[in-house]
Image 1: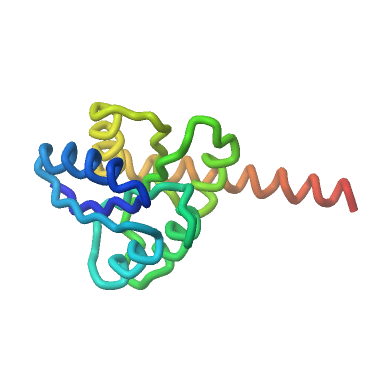
Image 2: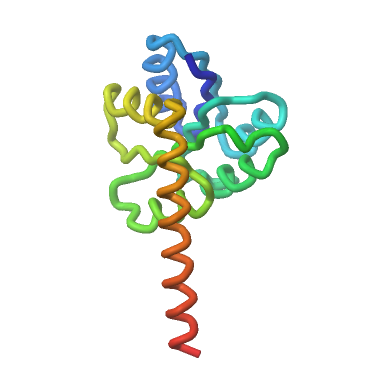
Length: 150
């Protein structure tokens, strides 16, 4: 089972996610915001970090990018929890280094499947390669748009 950190300012959502994952046998810690989440990441190794995109002090994208930069945390998988109306969220999540997404509202089964997806070695390798290809294509498109404007 995985060691998981849930970073979300909403204590009710953190508790629901924690109870679901505890019931699956995972070890789960909670962080009340991005600042606390980064402090935990500096002190402890987690297999998976579920992080809310929309937080006040430090947003989820910054937590992912800074968390990935912390020494010995490159194997940690980040999952961004997004609101359904957040159109830019998926791109920003993958640009920051997220491995997967959960769109709110999500259920227990979707949560379980996403955790499993990011913790299965074959899936991790394939997903990382696909995300890398998508990011390169996106960055190329942005560069071409900037060149066309300039």
